Image (cartoon, rainbow over all chains, first blue to last red; front, top):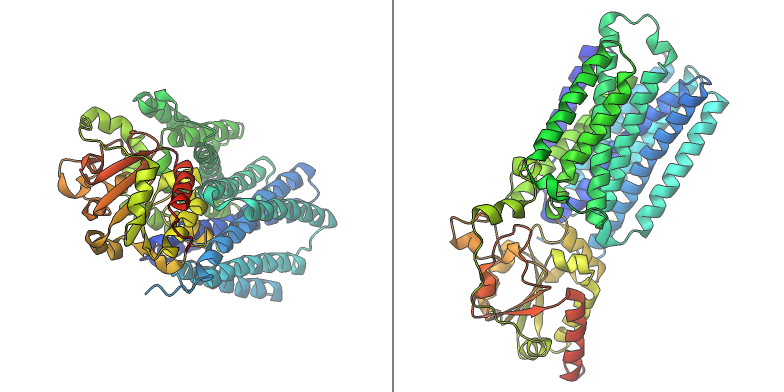
Length: 97
Length: 479
């Protein structure tokens, strides 16, 4: 991928993000933040790449592994905790309007 | 293009689409839970895509597998344990902690690439390419470090492990932060010039900057800061995407970054604060007591729990206004017991939820849902406001600024324009509060001076427990 096309990807991704959330009911602010936070743990892919390309370089393998651990802590914990919050809403008849 | 490349391309595309749908769905009550699962699925899909790509092309060494498995197991294990165990009241600091770890991950990736350049990416790099590489590494380190230390400080403050030091409320902090910022800039350019050792300077000063920026911010503004830091961790992920040349990372990071920014804006609006004043204004109380001489209370009526119980017993309609104090005292279950008693006595009870009630917008709904309060009894501000004139008793529990009539009546008040609950329209208002201290805005609450307002002093949980006892003595709820 050339740098310019990566910049396009960045630009379009940002625009998409800006458009995705328009009106959010206050009830959902906390879960939404927590869910988006879990997604930002996508850096786990970068950590994986690092490990795969380390080619036996042990310090790099360790850095990659620690980084992967942090990222997955964010991802797994984030999604579980969001689910826990949202489960409380959907347990009740949640048709507000 | 060979097969692994095509497969990865398709999977990445699908993952981006699902992630976008996930974020979109998370902003609607009905679809939120499924959307969260969809996003989780998209994330696992992206991992499968990446691993299958490497399996199909360069292969993955056994040694790599071992480290992948170690990292995954430890990270997921701790993440899921924490997510299952943490009480709902500490949700904000939990999100902060997760977020900080995401930032740390981006930081480590960039550090790893910087110290041990990945073999095939460093070969025959032209000048332009290596420049991009260094810039993205620096950005990733800078944003990642700020996200990490900022989130950890936010968490520590919300947990009460850290208080706001006095000097951070003075002008000194701007000076200190500017020094850190300039130092990071110097390290940044030094790094791009090829001086790799300045990477450590960058790590240190950007970490300090994260601390310096977050430390002065008051507890009640923390949700906004966490939301902003969440947006940063998206940016850090996007920067890491440039480092390892991954479009998926860039798209997902950019999406989270932008969406986080919008969410931050939405939250600021609900609290009637501008982002600038949250970030640079410091804790609001420091300013407002200095500027708008907050005035003394002249007509405070205090009353005992017993009186409160007697009034409640005679009421037909009661509105509960829960706030930050209730969340801090973790009194939502005790509150539920009180309202159960009242309901058994045929009294209509509803909960008025201000958009920013609790420790985070939407947090109060989560807490009350946890205490098994029926969803229909939770009323949003606009729905409940016309109800107050027909209400006998309002119980204000640990809320302050959101019930301050100044926001409607006094155009000189800093609160002016903030949407508030019109509790003063009710016949009697009981404010359960620890003392006469001001809310986080530091502004005098005119409500407390009104003749139909009585203060019940004490910790929310203790007062509610006493109230249960008094109601029992009166025979309320025991037909």
